[in-house]
Image (cartoon, rainbow, N blue to C red; front, side):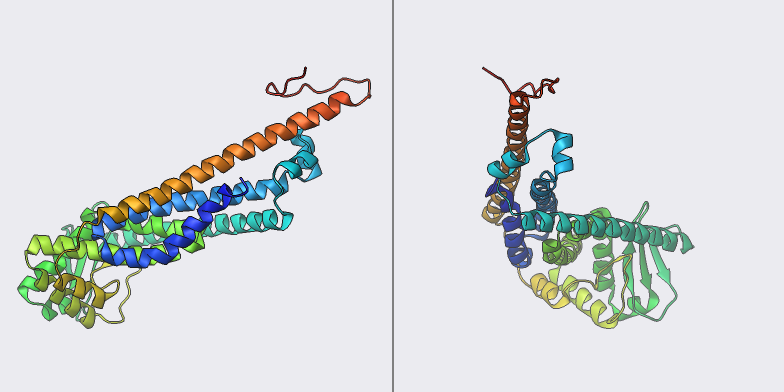
Length: 324
């Protein structure tokens, strides 16, 4: 446990450094699913490792040890984790849980707000054109999802570019990209090292929708022109409850659309999978070591109690602790 419990922290740090680059070189759809797996595994590993480290400190509290019927001295001998490390881990875990709860409430409010905005729309069709000169275009997730475009935005684009813009927004709705966003934001709230992953995830979703639109329209340059013009026209606009074609790093998206589609890069995905597997294996090993540590401490407490000349009844030791 002395080494394996720290592996999830190392994996999270490595992902925080490498994720922004991987988001630009992998095909966006594959990158999005890879980032989802990485976020889930790393967040669980982070919380699990903090919990195991915190337990080593909590378990040494006399009242806790008495309730659990284990020996504090045996615990300290089996797993000599400094109390300052255990206390810091407990604090980080508490802060992470509170941050996660706040993020859950925030995301729930955004979904409610999106539902309210959908309810205000008079039309029941998927596409809603609002009579507004301000250029805007975005997708409101839900059941059903809605695409909102202003007349000002439509006037800024050609017919083919309008088709590309709508294909982009439909891709957001069809692929349920808002669920990816919610998951990344929640895991980043629990584990602050995953914040770069959440930012990269937002870019990947826009690239995914760009590629879907390029396949639908059949012309990558048209989609690039539509993205660029829409972003310039709606500069400064923000739609926190929606997915907009003008989101993400627009210059990088345009450059990617003007280049050939990215290669599959299966080797990178395999390497990432091995890294996540190492995170899972190390956490499982640390949990197993922690369980064995508690068993040994309980056996030590039972042996000491049985050997004490008190003359009274002794508590029955655990089934795994045998005497000669």
